[in-house]
Image (cartoon, each protein chain N blue to C red):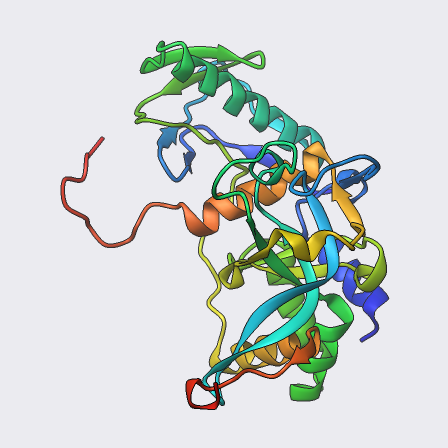
Length: 119
Length: 187
């Protein structure tokens, strides 16, 4: 089972928000995969509630028994597992070709396409 | 490499709790996190420059409320979905191109760990997804709601599975644009 660690100063990203997580309580959040996802989801839900209730505030927050410092926010909040938004591996042209071939092989052709001139 | 071996590599690399990914599909409506097989849809043929009609496995994206037959209103006639490539099919194509198991192992590890944002591994389900599959997020498409009338779902995502797939979609499609746009707000 993989373990993940939220480290002090780690920056997590969302489509809408960059949230700087600062650990001020001297604790690290370490857990196994499922529990960790759940923990982050709860943090997400909690932060969404802050937003809904209009009380999203920068500064210190107590969540999941941890203290988090929200350094910045915008209109929405999503916290995700570390590493998800890290360096993305681009597909090579040959890998794209493999993917394209797999798409066609997974598809059962039931009718050919038609050119406009054929109509 | 066999599908079983590939599944082990993907599972080991994936942050997913595979056992929690699916739930009961009984009584769930179209759009409630369901995966179907043999869904009629268009597929673009690059060489011929035409759309071909095909059937293939899909994960339905449209929300169930937006295609509820009991909720008759305009614009509830099309269903948005994302195709799923069965793992054995992908393996066959990959191994036809490269015989090296090392390359395949490395690629699967990257997909499993979500380093390839456009491909999301989904664990084994029923039917053609006995060994799982790859959801191709750049191939989102739509088809008419009537296409699903005769079909039964082959799997249903759990609340956990739905959340994981939703996050992948958000990361792939809704992440902040790399290029600066007008009126950007800086924080």
